[in-house]
Length: 372
Image (cartoon, rainbow, N blue to C red; front, side, top):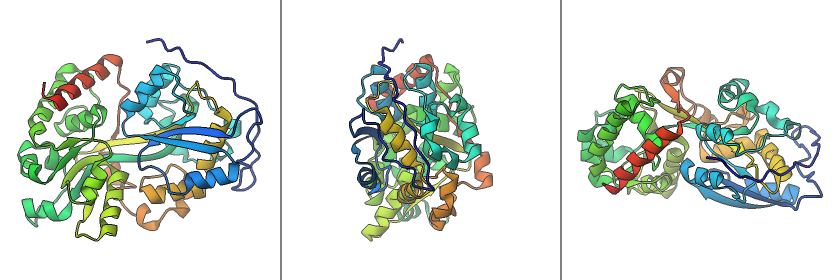
């Protein structure tokens, strides 16, 4: 598909770095002090935007989405109206190929020096030279569950450590009555199912993918809802006893449950079979109307104290190495947030799906959700 996107020239501007304060308010006079951000839901600290606005005078309009597919539809259509978006790395990689993003002006991002070189090198495999994107946060896909309800159903001796809890139809059938949520994203669910079945999670072979489709059809009668954000509150208030979701979301559910003090305990595990690890990336659409302000915002997020504040609040891992000293020890020591060396051996990155496989995934998903 050829994309007709309007490229805007970036006005030259130099940001002088002064300790942690990087002169973030030095916006170009040619740009109005406005910034439009499109980020994942439940994915920023409460005062991050207000602090940014106070320091820079740039007014932020902040919208949210809960799936890469929703974001991608806007990006490929063009004229999104957004200046900063946050796709996951594998989606970003093919969007780069489609010419969706403008290259970053790294002279305006001195705080790039704060990022972990090892993570940067891994990201560069899909975004060459880290030219178009900056890591926001990263995490894993796994299982969130209501500790009490799982014990009631499976017994006190049952150990939740495997995708067998949710990808084995016999087990999932036992959970139907207490609420089962799956992410509403084929690209996030099909690979872990394949991996659980002993197949290559990133296989493009239609016959292999059909095995995941068959298993998902077996599981479908017991799934309460496909949604990529509502499971947070559902777990927190006891309306769901299990969810296949993202690590930080489930830790947010655990925090909300604890604050509500209604007897709900939520836990998260990285399944022993292994699971997907992903990176969410800040990028600037090629048709962004405020690219200078976008650079100012990204550089602001890269400050150690700002990055740490966000990570501490949303419970996702930070690639900002300079921020780790400011991350809550409870978070740093949590193997569900920062996986152990053994757990890392089972983690896999998701592949960049070619168009024909992407279409296949979407057909499977539509059929699965509609029952047709």
